[in-house]
Length: 191
Image 1 (cartoon, rainbow, N blue to C red):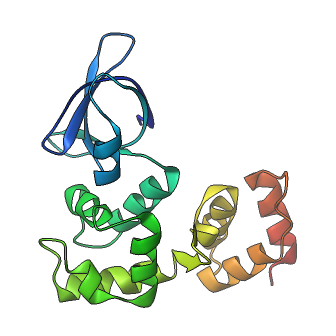
Image 2: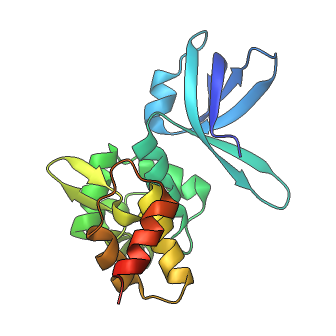
């Protein structure tokens, strides 16, 4: 997967930028609204990317922050939301505003995006409310990311419920430990 593009912006038009790398290759990246404002022609940029693989295309989507990319990936997990729609949702506002709207179940806010109806907005709110928590202006993706997320997924793969996996992971001291160490500890504690 292509996770980062570094180079000079060669063009910025119609929701996409072309970034020319040091090797002379120009990558077409569909950008978030925040990114498109920031990535001006001639500027050296480092763009976090997500590679969407389809039967007939490989499309790169670019983001200005890791939180923006993570929210995008969570939106893709919702049935009926594709990369272009997820990018349009990100154009509604800041990541904090969008996460807050999802947390509140604000259907009216989410239906501002063309192609998102009431049912789809409700599905987004219901499916992502547990995955995205918003408090004090910061966003947390909870147990679903990093080594802790790997441990939760590993426990689920071993037949434990999501609730049991999350409960045991919350009781672990995760500092300076990799997923393997955490999984061993979790298996010792889980009932």
